[in-house]
Image (tube, rainbow, N blue to C red):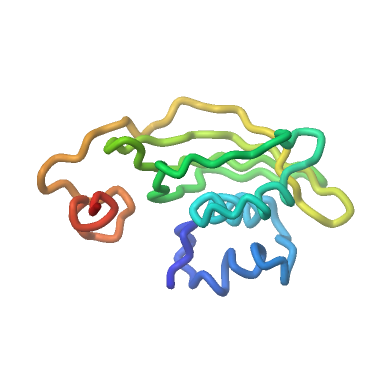
Length: 151
């Protein structure tokens, strides 16, 4: 199975090793990708464990109606114990494809990368309602109605 983070690697060799906590991410980008995958898998426990306690919400609730379609890492800067990762994540909600564009901040404490917060940016991907024969934005080559739009 390909990893949901769209790294091009198999899930077991990519985010699964972090989500199962068999291995700690060595880079902030690895943590960001594994957190995206945790959103895809609705793994609240991993999301909370990788969120800095000073920034973590009291209660994290995920929207069951959101289907995550893809991730694109746009930039990554790591300076010592701090890092930022800019990404755009595509999602399907209420029959419409949209995107979240964020510049996420991370800090490394006691050898562990943790998400702190992020600056929400305007997405380059404009929201759209798929047409009859539209290609799926998850980039698997199928038509939307036979892929992520299948009910």
